[in-house]
Amino acid sequence: MFTCSSAARRLALPARRRWLLFAAASASLLLRVDARAAPRVIKVHARRFVFTPNRISLAPHERVTFELTAEDALMGFSIPQLGVRADVPPGIVVHLSAEAGDAGTVQFLCDIFCGSGHETMNGVLVVG
Image 1 (cartoon, rainbow, N blue to C red):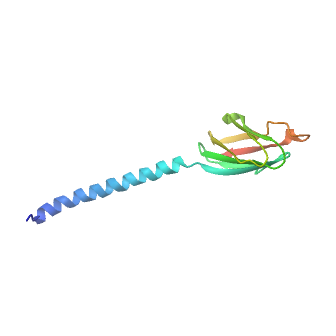
Image 2: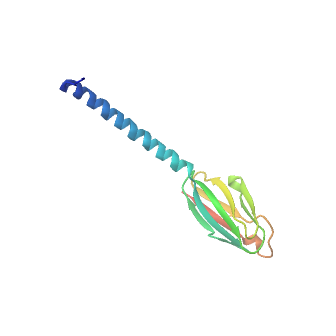
Image 3: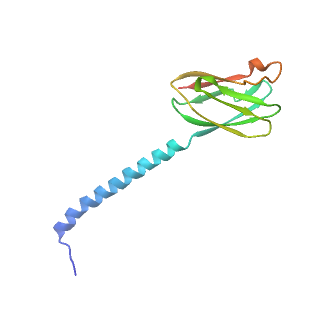
């Protein structure tokens, strides 16, 4: 039968603490990786000449997925400064991923002609 002396127990305890600290730090890193892996979902609804919402706030370099729907006609959703766009047919949910840049404002717009008033169908991303 093996018995530990009190001196051996004192030496083993710091090793246990080191292992617990290592495990806690590793778990913290995994949580950060998971948070980075899951972009925020932002629902945007389009109908003739209006996006709802038409003003969206983002953090710098935030990754998002736009969940796009259209009510009454084929719409386009374009963010030229971010280099992303999608066609949004009525009744279909379209997902579009993007990453915000540095602080500032970025325009989004409908890039498929949807009738008189189309030229005012836009919105803004406020990054900051």
